[in-house]
Length: 454
Ligand code: UD1
Ligand code: CA
Image (cartoon, rainbow, N blue to C red; front, side, top):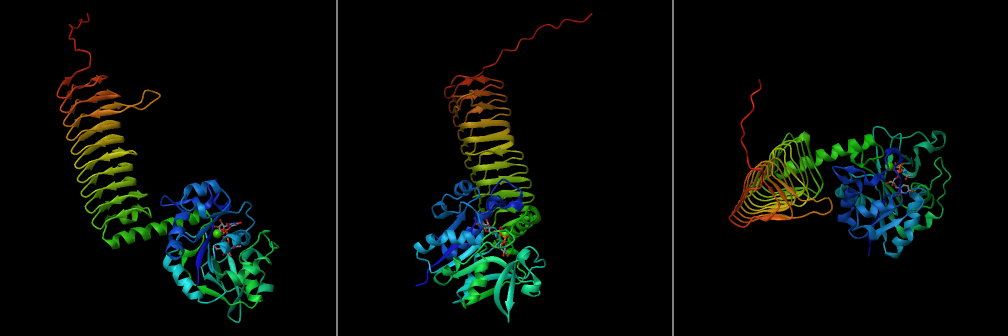
Protein backbone atom coordinates (compact mmCIF):
# COMPACT_ATOMS: atom_id res chain seq x y z
CA UNK A 1 0.00 0.00 0.00
CA UNK A 2 1.23 3.45 -0.83
CA UNK A 3 1.95 5.75 2.11
CA UNK A 4 2.35 9.39 1.14
CA UNK A 5 4.03 11.87 3.47
CA UNK A 6 5.41 15.38 3.19
CA UNK A 7 8.62 17.07 4.18
CA UNK A 8 8.56 20.85 4.39
CA UNK A 9 11.95 22.51 4.06
CA UNK A 10 12.05 25.34 6.57
CA UNK A 11 15.55 25.34 8.04
CA UNK A 12 17.10 28.12 5.97
CA UNK A 13 17.86 31.56 7.23
CA UNK A 14 16.29 33.63 4.50
CA UNK A 15 19.27 35.96 4.17
CA UNK A 16 17.59 37.94 1.41
CA UNK A 17 14.80 38.93 3.81
CA UNK A 18 17.27 40.96 5.95
CA UNK A 19 15.27 40.14 9.07
CA UNK A 20 16.27 38.53 12.38
CA UNK A 21 13.09 36.41 12.16
CA UNK A 22 13.35 33.01 10.40
CA UNK A 23 11.91 33.41 6.91
CA UNK A 24 9.18 30.81 7.36
CA UNK A 25 7.84 32.84 10.30
CA UNK A 26 7.49 36.02 8.25
CA UNK A 27 3.83 36.95 8.38
CA UNK A 28 1.26 37.25 5.63
CA UNK A 29 -2.03 38.67 6.93
CA UNK A 30 -0.73 38.12 10.46
CA UNK A 31 -0.18 34.37 9.98
CA UNK A 32 3.31 32.89 9.57
CA UNK A 33 4.31 31.72 6.10
CA UNK A 34 4.50 28.13 7.35
CA UNK A 35 0.86 28.21 8.41
CA UNK A 36 -0.16 28.32 4.76
CA UNK A 37 2.18 25.54 3.71
CA UNK A 38 0.79 23.29 6.45
CA UNK A 39 -2.74 24.14 5.36
CA UNK A 40 -1.91 23.16 1.77
CA UNK A 41 -0.27 19.86 2.77
CA UNK A 42 -2.77 18.84 5.47
CA UNK A 43 -5.54 17.45 3.22
CA UNK A 44 -2.99 15.20 1.47
CA UNK A 45 -0.63 14.12 4.21
CA UNK A 46 -2.26 15.11 7.55
CA UNK A 47 -0.17 13.82 10.45
CA UNK A 48 2.44 12.46 8.06
CA UNK A 49 3.91 15.92 7.58
CA UNK A 50 7.46 16.57 8.78
CA UNK A 51 9.30 19.87 8.89
CA UNK A 52 13.02 20.55 8.56
CA UNK A 53 14.03 23.26 10.98
CA UNK A 54 17.39 24.84 11.75
CA UNK A 55 17.69 28.59 11.72
CA UNK A 56 15.59 29.91 14.64
CA UNK A 57 14.53 26.32 15.45
CA UNK A 58 13.12 27.16 18.88
CA UNK A 59 11.07 30.00 17.49
CA UNK A 60 9.64 27.79 14.77
CA UNK A 61 8.78 25.05 17.28
CA UNK A 62 7.19 27.66 19.53
CA UNK A 63 5.06 29.02 16.71
CA UNK A 64 3.67 25.56 15.84
CA UNK A 65 3.62 23.48 19.02
CA UNK A 66 1.25 20.95 17.42
CA UNK A 67 3.85 20.25 14.69
CA UNK A 68 6.91 20.30 16.96
CA UNK A 69 6.88 16.52 17.48
CA UNK A 70 7.50 16.05 13.75
CA UNK A 71 10.13 18.72 13.32
CA UNK A 72 13.59 17.50 12.41
CA UNK A 73 16.64 19.55 13.27
CA UNK A 74 19.13 20.34 10.54
CA UNK A 75 21.72 21.80 12.87
CA UNK A 76 23.89 23.15 10.05
CA UNK A 77 22.04 24.30 6.97
CA UNK A 78 24.25 22.87 4.27
CA UNK A 79 21.62 23.05 1.56
CA UNK A 80 18.27 21.64 0.49
CA UNK A 81 19.86 18.29 -0.48
CA UNK A 82 21.50 18.05 2.92
CA UNK A 83 18.08 18.75 4.49
CA UNK A 84 16.60 15.74 2.68
CA UNK A 85 19.57 13.55 3.65
CA UNK A 86 19.12 14.55 7.30
CA UNK A 87 15.40 13.75 7.22
CA UNK A 88 15.69 10.44 5.40
CA UNK A 89 16.12 8.08 8.38
CA UNK A 90 13.06 9.63 10.11
CA UNK A 91 10.93 9.26 6.97
CA UNK A 92 12.03 5.70 6.34
CA UNK A 93 11.32 4.79 9.97
CA UNK A 94 7.80 6.17 9.50
CA UNK A 95 7.23 3.70 6.66
CA UNK A 96 6.61 6.23 3.90
CA UNK A 97 6.71 4.96 0.34
CA UNK A 98 6.18 8.29 -1.40
CA UNK A 99 7.32 11.70 -0.25
CA UNK A 100 6.29 15.20 -1.22
CA UNK A 101 9.08 17.69 -0.56
CA UNK A 102 7.88 21.28 -0.40
CA UNK A 103 9.98 24.42 -0.05
CA UNK A 104 8.68 26.20 3.06
CA UNK A 105 8.69 29.56 1.31
CA UNK A 106 5.72 28.92 -1.01
CA UNK A 107 2.77 30.07 1.09
CA UNK A 108 0.43 30.73 -1.84
CA UNK A 109 0.42 27.08 -2.83
CA UNK A 110 -3.09 25.56 -2.71
CA UNK A 111 -3.89 22.00 -1.69
CA UNK A 112 -5.75 21.50 -4.99
CA UNK A 113 -2.50 22.27 -6.84
CA UNK A 114 -0.61 19.73 -4.74
CA UNK A 115 -3.26 17.12 -5.52
CA UNK A 116 -3.07 17.86 -9.25
CA UNK A 117 0.71 17.63 -9.07
CA UNK A 118 0.77 14.30 -7.25
CA UNK A 119 -1.74 12.85 -9.73
CA UNK A 120 0.29 14.13 -12.68
CA UNK A 121 3.40 12.44 -11.27
CA UNK A 122 1.57 9.13 -11.64
CA UNK A 123 3.93 6.24 -11.06
CA UNK A 124 7.09 8.24 -11.78
CA UNK A 125 10.06 7.64 -9.50
CA UNK A 126 10.73 11.35 -9.24
CA UNK A 127 8.35 14.13 -10.19
CA UNK A 128 8.98 17.84 -9.79
CA UNK A 129 6.90 20.89 -10.44
CA UNK A 130 8.10 23.42 -12.98
CA UNK A 131 7.04 26.92 -14.01
CA UNK A 132 7.68 29.25 -16.88
CA UNK A 133 7.75 32.67 -15.19
CA UNK A 134 8.45 35.98 -16.93
CA UNK A 135 11.84 36.23 -15.20
CA UNK A 136 13.62 32.90 -14.61
CA UNK A 137 16.89 34.56 -13.57
CA UNK A 138 17.08 33.56 -9.91
CA UNK A 139 15.85 29.97 -10.01
CA UNK A 140 16.95 26.44 -10.75
CA UNK A 141 16.75 26.04 -14.53
CA UNK A 142 15.34 22.88 -16.09
CA UNK A 143 17.44 21.10 -18.68
CA UNK A 144 15.65 18.81 -21.14
CA UNK A 145 16.99 16.49 -23.79
CA UNK A 146 14.63 15.24 -26.45
CA UNK A 147 11.83 16.75 -24.38
CA UNK A 148 12.65 14.67 -21.29
CA UNK A 149 13.92 16.43 -18.13
CA UNK A 150 17.53 15.50 -17.50
CA UNK A 151 18.69 18.00 -14.86
CA UNK A 152 18.02 21.16 -12.88
CA UNK A 153 20.92 23.59 -12.75
CA UNK A 154 20.84 26.64 -10.45
CA UNK A 155 20.95 29.85 -12.48
CA UNK A 156 24.33 30.83 -11.03
CA UNK A 157 25.82 27.49 -12.08
CA UNK A 158 24.17 27.43 -15.50
CA UNK A 159 26.53 27.38 -18.46
CA UNK A 160 24.80 27.57 -21.85
CA UNK A 161 27.88 26.08 -23.51
CA UNK A 162 27.49 22.98 -21.36
CA UNK A 163 23.74 22.89 -20.69
CA UNK A 164 22.44 24.33 -23.95
CA UNK A 165 20.29 27.42 -24.49
CA UNK A 166 17.78 27.84 -21.76
CA UNK A 167 14.03 27.46 -22.34
CA UNK A 168 12.80 29.60 -19.43
CA UNK A 169 11.41 26.59 -17.52
CA UNK A 170 12.31 26.66 -13.83
CA UNK A 171 12.08 24.38 -10.82
CA UNK A 172 9.36 25.44 -8.33
CA UNK A 173 10.86 23.56 -5.37
CA UNK A 174 8.09 20.94 -5.01
CA UNK A 175 9.01 17.30 -5.54
CA UNK A 176 7.32 13.91 -5.34
CA UNK A 177 9.71 11.02 -4.69
CA UNK A 178 9.45 7.26 -4.46
CA UNK A 179 11.71 6.90 -1.45
CA UNK A 180 12.91 3.40 -2.22
CA UNK A 181 14.15 4.49 -5.66
CA UNK A 182 15.48 7.94 -4.79
CA UNK A 183 17.09 7.29 -1.38
CA UNK A 184 20.15 5.48 -2.86
CA UNK A 185 20.90 8.59 -4.96
CA UNK A 186 21.29 10.88 -1.96
CA UNK A 187 24.69 9.39 -1.12
CA UNK A 188 25.94 10.74 -4.42
CA UNK A 189 25.09 14.38 -3.74
CA UNK A 190 28.07 16.71 -3.52
CA UNK A 191 28.51 20.38 -2.72
CA UNK A 192 30.68 21.14 -5.74
CA UNK A 193 28.86 24.21 -7.00
CA UNK A 194 29.05 28.00 -6.69
CA UNK A 195 27.25 28.04 -3.31
CA UNK A 196 29.15 25.12 -1.76
CA UNK A 197 25.78 23.59 -0.78
CA UNK A 198 24.21 20.18 -1.23
CA UNK A 199 21.37 20.84 -3.68
CA UNK A 200 18.22 18.71 -3.67
CA UNK A 201 17.93 19.60 -7.34
CA UNK A 202 20.94 17.45 -8.18
CA UNK A 203 18.83 14.33 -7.58
CA UNK A 204 17.06 15.07 -10.87
CA UNK A 205 20.25 14.68 -12.91
CA UNK A 206 21.28 11.67 -10.82
CA UNK A 207 17.88 10.00 -11.31
CA UNK A 208 17.90 10.63 -15.06
CA UNK A 209 21.42 9.21 -15.30
CA UNK A 210 20.40 6.11 -13.34
CA UNK A 211 17.55 5.52 -15.79
CA UNK A 212 14.77 6.28 -13.29
CA UNK A 213 11.44 7.62 -14.49
CA UNK A 214 11.57 11.41 -14.02
CA UNK A 215 8.57 13.66 -14.69
CA UNK A 216 8.60 17.46 -14.85
CA UNK A 217 5.05 18.71 -14.33
CA UNK A 218 4.69 22.22 -15.77
CA UNK A 219 2.22 24.66 -14.18
CA UNK A 220 2.84 27.44 -16.74
CA UNK A 221 3.37 30.92 -15.32
CA UNK A 222 1.37 30.32 -12.10
CA UNK A 223 2.82 33.09 -9.90
CA UNK A 224 1.31 31.59 -6.74
CA UNK A 225 3.98 28.91 -6.81
CA UNK A 226 7.02 31.18 -6.85
CA UNK A 227 9.06 31.10 -3.65
CA UNK A 228 9.22 34.18 -1.45
CA UNK A 229 12.75 35.35 -0.74
CA UNK A 230 12.71 39.13 -0.29
CA UNK A 231 10.53 41.84 1.30
CA UNK A 232 9.35 42.81 -2.18
CA UNK A 233 8.22 39.25 -2.94
CA UNK A 234 6.65 38.96 0.51
CA UNK A 235 4.58 42.10 -0.06
CA UNK A 236 3.50 40.95 -3.51
CA UNK A 237 2.57 37.48 -2.18
CA UNK A 238 0.66 38.96 0.73
CA UNK A 239 -1.35 41.17 -1.59
CA UNK A 240 -2.29 38.24 -3.82
CA UNK A 241 -3.34 36.26 -0.79
CA UNK A 242 -5.36 39.19 0.55
CA UNK A 243 -7.26 39.54 -2.71
CA UNK A 244 -7.86 35.77 -2.77
CA UNK A 245 -9.27 35.60 0.77
CA UNK A 246 -11.49 38.66 0.27
CA UNK A 247 -12.84 37.22 -2.96
CA UNK A 248 -13.57 33.89 -1.26
CA UNK A 249 -15.49 35.72 1.49
CA UNK A 250 -17.47 37.74 -1.06
CA UNK A 251 -18.34 34.61 -3.00
CA UNK A 252 -19.48 32.93 0.22
CA UNK A 253 -21.93 35.79 0.83
CA UNK A 254 -20.12 38.19 3.15
CA UNK A 255 -21.01 41.82 2.44
CA UNK A 256 -17.78 43.72 1.91
CA UNK A 257 -17.67 47.39 1.05
CA UNK A 258 -14.41 48.75 -0.31
CA UNK A 259 -12.98 45.22 -0.68
CA UNK A 260 -9.64 46.47 -1.98
CA UNK A 261 -8.92 47.83 1.51
CA UNK A 262 -10.05 44.80 3.53
CA UNK A 263 -7.55 42.35 5.01
CA UNK A 264 -8.77 39.00 6.32
CA UNK A 265 -6.47 36.51 8.01
CA UNK A 266 -6.61 32.89 6.85
CA UNK A 267 -8.27 31.65 10.04
CA UNK A 268 -10.96 34.33 10.23
CA UNK A 269 -14.47 32.95 9.74
CA UNK A 270 -17.01 35.39 8.38
CA UNK A 271 -20.48 33.98 8.06
CA UNK A 272 -22.54 34.84 5.01
CA UNK A 273 -24.47 37.98 5.89
CA UNK A 274 -21.74 39.50 8.07
CA UNK A 275 -20.90 42.99 6.83
CA UNK A 276 -17.64 44.91 6.82
CA UNK A 277 -16.41 48.17 5.38
CA UNK A 278 -12.78 48.78 4.52
CA UNK A 279 -10.23 49.84 5.41
CA UNK A 280 -10.40 47.14 8.03
CA UNK A 281 -8.37 44.17 9.26
CA UNK A 282 -9.72 40.95 10.75
CA UNK A 283 -7.12 38.45 11.86
CA UNK A 284 -6.52 35.36 13.97
CA UNK A 285 -9.34 33.04 14.98
CA UNK A 286 -11.98 35.74 14.61
CA UNK A 287 -15.59 34.88 13.90
CA UNK A 288 -18.28 37.24 12.66
CA UNK A 289 -21.82 35.95 12.80
CA UNK A 290 -24.48 36.71 10.23
CA UNK A 291 -25.67 40.28 10.74
CA UNK A 292 -22.56 41.38 12.64
CA UNK A 293 -21.18 44.59 11.21
CA UNK A 294 -17.77 46.26 11.34
CA UNK A 295 -17.33 49.80 10.07
CA UNK A 296 -14.18 51.27 8.55
CA UNK A 297 -10.77 51.64 10.22
CA UNK A 298 -11.08 48.76 12.67
CA UNK A 299 -8.61 46.04 13.57
CA UNK A 300 -9.86 42.78 15.09
CA UNK A 301 -7.73 39.85 16.18
CA UNK A 302 -9.20 36.70 17.76
CA UNK A 303 -12.54 38.40 18.20
CA UNK A 304 -16.00 36.91 18.13
CA UNK A 305 -18.89 39.13 17.07
CA UNK A 306 -22.32 37.60 17.55
CA UNK A 307 -25.37 38.34 15.43
CA UNK A 308 -26.24 42.02 14.99
CA UNK A 309 -23.23 43.18 17.01
CA UNK A 310 -21.91 46.40 15.59
CA UNK A 311 -18.43 47.84 15.77
CA UNK A 312 -18.30 51.49 14.75
CA UNK A 313 -15.28 53.07 13.11
CA UNK A 314 -11.76 53.30 14.56
CA UNK A 315 -11.86 50.43 17.05
CA UNK A 316 -9.09 48.07 18.12
CA UNK A 317 -10.27 44.69 19.44
CA UNK A 318 -8.12 41.77 20.55
CA UNK A 319 -9.03 38.43 22.18
CA UNK A 320 -12.51 39.69 22.93
CA UNK A 321 -16.10 38.47 22.69
CA UNK A 322 -18.92 40.75 21.67
CA UNK A 323 -22.38 39.33 22.22
CA UNK A 324 -25.52 39.69 20.15
CA UNK A 325 -26.77 43.21 19.49
CA UNK A 326 -23.87 44.93 21.28
CA UNK A 327 -22.46 48.30 20.25
CA UNK A 328 -18.74 49.06 20.34
CA UNK A 329 -17.06 52.38 19.55
CA UNK A 330 -16.42 54.50 17.65
CA UNK A 331 -12.87 54.72 19.02
CA UNK A 332 -13.13 51.87 21.53
CA UNK A 333 -10.45 49.44 22.57
CA UNK A 334 -11.30 45.92 23.72
CA UNK A 335 -8.23 44.22 25.12
CA UNK A 336 -7.73 40.52 25.91
CA UNK A 337 -10.44 39.05 28.08
CA UNK A 338 -13.07 41.68 27.29
CA UNK A 339 -16.52 40.08 27.13
CA UNK A 340 -19.67 41.97 26.25
CA UNK A 341 -22.89 40.12 26.84
CA UNK A 342 -26.04 40.73 24.85
CA UNK A 343 -26.89 44.39 24.17
CA UNK A 344 -23.95 45.73 26.21
CA UNK A 345 -22.22 48.88 25.03
CA UNK A 346 -18.66 50.14 25.12
CA UNK A 347 -18.68 53.57 23.56
CA UNK A 348 -16.16 56.15 22.45
CA UNK A 349 -12.75 56.24 24.11
CA UNK A 350 -13.61 53.29 26.32
CA UNK A 351 -10.98 50.67 27.13
CA UNK A 352 -12.05 47.27 28.46
CA UNK A 353 -9.54 44.66 29.63
CA UNK A 354 -10.21 41.28 31.28
CA UNK A 355 -13.67 42.43 32.18
CA UNK A 356 -17.24 41.43 31.57
CA UNK A 357 -20.01 43.84 30.70
CA UNK A 358 -23.13 41.86 31.52
CA UNK A 359 -26.27 42.02 29.43
CA UNK A 360 -27.37 45.56 28.66
CA UNK A 361 -24.58 47.24 30.69
CA UNK A 362 -23.60 50.64 29.32
CA UNK A 363 -20.13 52.12 29.44
CA UNK A 364 -20.48 54.86 26.93
CA UNK A 365 -17.71 57.44 27.23
CA UNK A 366 -14.05 57.94 28.20
CA UNK A 367 -13.70 55.06 30.64
CA UNK A 368 -11.28 52.32 31.70
CA UNK A 369 -12.76 49.04 32.87
CA UNK A 370 -10.09 46.49 33.76
CA UNK A 371 -10.27 43.34 35.92
CA UNK A 372 -13.92 43.97 36.55
CA UNK A 373 -17.48 42.88 36.13
CA UNK A 374 -20.21 45.36 35.32
CA UNK A 375 -23.60 43.88 36.19
CA UNK A 376 -26.58 43.59 33.90
CA UNK A 377 -28.13 46.92 33.02
CA UNK A 378 -25.59 48.94 35.07
CA UNK A 379 -24.61 52.38 33.78
CA UNK A 380 -21.05 53.58 34.10
CA UNK A 381 -20.67 57.35 33.65
CA UNK A 382 -18.12 59.20 31.57
CA UNK A 383 -14.57 59.29 32.87
CA UNK A 384 -14.87 56.36 35.27
CA UNK A 385 -11.68 54.49 36.07
CA UNK A 386 -11.31 51.10 37.73
CA UNK A 387 -8.00 51.60 39.56
CA UNK A 388 -6.99 47.95 39.32
CA UNK A 389 -3.24 48.16 39.86
CA UNK A 390 -1.51 49.10 43.10
CA UNK A 391 1.96 49.00 41.61
CA UNK A 392 2.38 45.29 42.40
CA UNK A 393 -0.87 43.42 41.99
CA UNK A 394 -4.08 43.65 40.01
CA UNK A 395 -7.37 43.78 41.92
CA UNK A 396 -10.97 43.21 40.96
CA UNK A 397 -13.88 45.62 40.80
CA UNK A 398 -17.46 44.37 40.90
CA UNK A 399 -20.34 46.58 39.93
CA UNK A 400 -23.74 45.07 40.66
CA UNK A 401 -26.69 44.78 38.33
CA UNK A 402 -28.52 48.05 37.74
CA UNK A 403 -25.91 50.15 39.60
CA UNK A 404 -25.25 53.72 38.47
CA UNK A 405 -21.71 55.10 38.60
CA UNK A 406 -21.56 58.89 38.35
CA UNK A 407 -19.12 60.57 35.99
CA UNK A 408 -15.46 60.90 36.84
CA UNK A 409 -15.46 58.20 39.51
CA UNK A 410 -12.32 56.34 40.59
CA UNK A 411 -13.12 52.83 41.86
CA UNK A 412 -10.05 51.79 43.84
CA UNK A 413 -9.93 48.01 43.66
CA UNK A 414 -10.52 45.65 45.30
CA UNK A 415 -13.94 47.14 45.70
CA UNK A 416 -17.55 46.40 44.94
CA UNK A 417 -20.64 48.45 44.30
CA UNK A 418 -23.79 46.54 45.16
CA UNK A 419 -26.73 45.92 42.88
CA UNK A 420 -28.88 49.00 42.38
CA UNK A 421 -26.41 51.23 44.26
CA UNK A 422 -25.41 54.69 43.08
CA UNK A 423 -22.11 56.56 43.22
CA UNK A 424 -22.03 60.35 43.08
CA UNK A 425 -20.02 62.02 40.33
CA UNK A 426 -16.38 62.71 41.09
CA UNK A 427 -16.14 60.12 43.87
CA UNK A 428 -13.05 58.17 44.86
CA UNK A 429 -14.53 54.88 46.06
CA UNK A 430 -12.22 52.91 48.35
CA UNK A 431 -14.82 50.98 50.39
CA UNK A 432 -17.57 48.67 49.22
CA UNK A 433 -20.93 50.29 48.55
CA UNK A 434 -23.79 48.12 49.84
CA UNK A 435 -26.68 47.17 47.62
CA UNK A 436 -29.20 49.94 47.04
CA UNK A 437 -27.18 52.68 48.82
CA UNK A 438 -25.77 55.95 47.53
CA UNK A 439 -22.08 56.68 48.04
CA UNK A 440 -20.52 60.10 47.68
CA UNK A 441 -16.79 60.35 48.30
CA UNK A 442 -15.49 63.76 47.39
CA UNK A 443 -14.70 67.05 49.08
CA UNK A 444 -17.81 69.06 49.86
CA UNK A 445 -18.23 72.18 47.86
CA UNK A 446 -17.57 75.40 49.74
CA UNK A 447 -18.70 78.71 48.30
CA UNK A 448 -16.80 81.74 49.68
CA UNK A 449 -17.05 85.43 49.03
CA UNK A 450 -14.60 86.43 46.37
CA UNK A 451 -12.23 89.27 47.31
CA UNK A 452 -12.67 92.23 45.06
CA UNK A 453 -9.48 93.44 43.48
CA UNK A 454 -9.02 97.15 44.12
C1 UD1 B 1 15.37 26.60 -4.49
C2 UD1 B 1 15.85 25.60 -5.53
C3 UD1 B 1 15.67 26.19 -6.93
C4 UD1 B 1 14.22 26.57 -7.13
C5 UD1 B 1 13.73 27.49 -6.02
C6 UD1 B 1 12.25 27.68 -6.14
C7 UD1 B 1 17.70 24.39 -4.50
C8 UD1 B 1 19.16 24.17 -4.49
N1 UD1 B 1 17.25 25.31 -5.33
O1 UD1 B 1 16.21 27.74 -4.57
O2 UD1 B 1 16.03 25.23 -7.89
O3 UD1 B 1 14.07 27.20 -8.40
O4 UD1 B 1 14.00 26.93 -4.73
O5 UD1 B 1 11.77 28.63 -5.25
O6 UD1 B 1 16.98 23.71 -3.81
N2 UD1 B 1 16.31 25.08 3.34
C9 UD1 B 1 16.54 24.12 4.31
N3 UD1 B 1 17.82 23.75 4.60
C10 UD1 B 1 18.89 24.27 3.95
C11 UD1 B 1 18.66 25.25 2.94
C12 UD1 B 1 17.36 25.61 2.66
O7 UD1 B 1 15.61 23.61 4.93
O8 UD1 B 1 20.02 23.88 4.27
C13 UD1 B 1 14.93 25.48 3.04
C14 UD1 B 1 14.68 26.98 3.15
O9 UD1 B 1 14.24 27.31 4.45
C15 UD1 B 1 13.61 27.23 2.10
C16 UD1 B 1 13.78 26.10 1.11
O10 UD1 B 1 14.64 25.15 1.70
O11 UD1 B 1 12.30 27.17 2.64
C17 UD1 B 1 14.41 26.58 -0.19
O12 UD1 B 1 15.63 27.24 0.08
P1 UD1 B 1 16.03 28.58 -0.62
O13 UD1 B 1 17.33 29.02 -0.09
O14 UD1 B 1 14.91 29.54 -0.59
O15 UD1 B 1 16.24 28.05 -2.11
P2 UD1 B 1 16.28 28.90 -3.45
O16 UD1 B 1 17.61 29.54 -3.58
O17 UD1 B 1 15.09 29.76 -3.52
CA1 CA C 1 13.38 30.20 -2.17
